[in-house]
Length: 446
Image 1 (tube, rainbow, N blue to C red):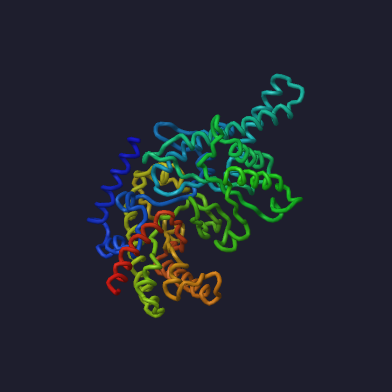
Image 2: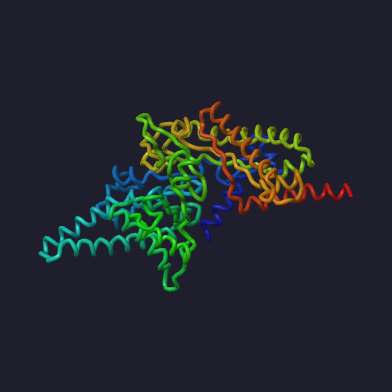
C-alpha cells in the first residue's frame, strides 16, 4: 500500500503543478470544464514521460543490455529469456505511464526455445540416452511451459515504481515453427490452468491472439489447433482478445499488436526502407467531449461544426504541449528506454530523446468519446444504428476528426492519430460535468 499511496500523493502534486505552471491557461480551463480531457495529468507533463509502447524485446535480448548494475548477455535458454523479460517489463513500466506491449512474443522468443532444445540434446548425447531427440523434445516442452508459468506469476506479483502491476500485453499467434507453436501453447495452457491453488484467472499479461487466413483460421490451416486452443482459453478465462490480421493491415497499413488496450501504430519505415514497429511508442492523448459540443449547439448543426473546429484548435494546442515537454530531455533520464534498447535505439546519456519521436516514428493521439450521444443531442433520441442518415452524420464527425489529425501530421511531421478513447472512467467524468452544467441550465429555463 505504501508505494501506491506515495504515487497517489505524488500524482496530486504533479497535477497541481502542471495546471499552475506548465500548461496554457486556456488548456487548463478547458480540461477543468470538461471540454477536453488531458489524460494522465498525474504523470505528464510534470515528468518527461510518454504513454504506451511496443518494447523492442528482440533487440534487447539478442544484443544484450545493462540493467541496474548488471550487464545482461543474450540468454541461452527459454527459461532465462522469460526471466529477463519479466525484469524488462518491470523496468519499462516504471518509466512510462501507459501500457507495455511485447509484439509477436512467440516469434521473438522462439530462438531461445531452440537454445534450450540444443542444450537438452547435448545432455542426452553426453549421457548416452537412447532416444536423444525424444528426451530433448520432452525436456524442452516442460521447460517452455514452466518458463511461461513463471513469467505469468512474476508479471502478476511484481510492482512497478508506482506501486502497480504492469499493464502488459503479449501479442502472439503468427509463428509457424515448432518453437513458436510451443510458446503459443504454453501461454494458452498456463492461462487456462489459472493461478495458484484456487486457479484464479490471471489479470495480466493481457493476451492478444492473431488469426490469419491460411495460417490458423480454418480447418486444415497448419495452426488451426492453436486457434481452437485460444478459443477455449477465451471461453474459460476471457482472454485472449482476437485480432483479425487482414483487418489490422487494412486499417493501419501493417500488422502489429496494440499498445496497451487499443492504440495501434501506423506504418513507419527506417532509413533502409524497412517497416519498424517494435521500439515505437505513443506520446499521449487528449480527448474531446463531443456530446458537450452537441449540447452547446442546441440542435443547430452549423453551430456544432463551428464549435468542433474551435475545440480542435484547442486540442492541438494541448497535444503540442506533450511534444514540447520532451524537447531537450536527455537519454539518461530513462536508460532502459533510450540507452539500453527498449525504444529500439542505443543513445548516449546526453543525447536528446526528442529526435526518435519525429517523422511519424511515435504516435500522438486525438481521442473522442460519445458519438451516439452526440447524434442524440443534435438530432433526437433515435438510435444511431437504426437510422442510416444518423449513422452517416456520426461517420461525418469521425471523418472530420480524421482530416484534422492528418492535417496536423502534414504540418508538423509528428504522427498524429485518431483514437476512440477507452473511456471507462472518462465517460463518467464527462457525464457528471455535462449533467451539472446543462441540467442546471434546463432548470433555469423551466
